[in-house]
Image (cartoon, rainbow, N blue to C red; front, side, top):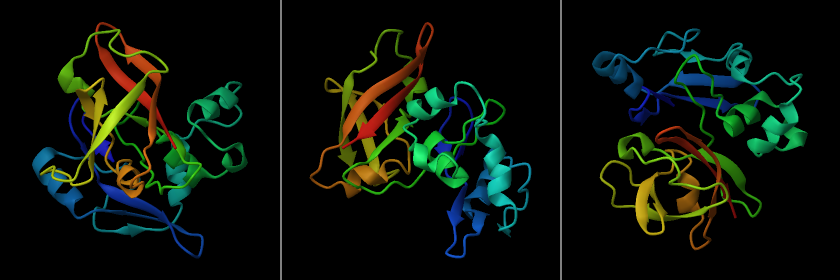
Length: 208
């Protein structure tokens, strides 16, 4: 996924692990249109939007990950709901922590499947449009959600609510698991808030 700060997110490519253990990255065809119409800039090491990359892919994207020798790495993994047994797996870590860095607007969103012990962190999308004041949310507060299969822009859209009031959406791709859950309701708990005069970002824990 990639986005302009404060603007909509757009899915630009797919990172997968093949059965032979190779990691493959390729852009979606829509990335070409994004480049032509909106000035999308490809990833520095992967400039060709028509090519399938399968060499050193995970090593390059893995440079986005927080170094494992940092003294606060345990707290970092705990925040992102990382399974300590998989902390060596760069592919897993990119999905869990979204590979966020301060130098660009790329992020990696895992296509989660519904399982009984599901838990991961996501961020509320669409907050910048609402300009909600500081103090709107509280750590530990639980939110509600509604599926929007008739949404004209995304049939897998999941609207977020705070006491019945719309406050944003679940990130695209993360929203799939809410539909897969069927009659099983997922729990949404606010875990972290970035705010000054207004709410800038809200991270939410998703669990069964």
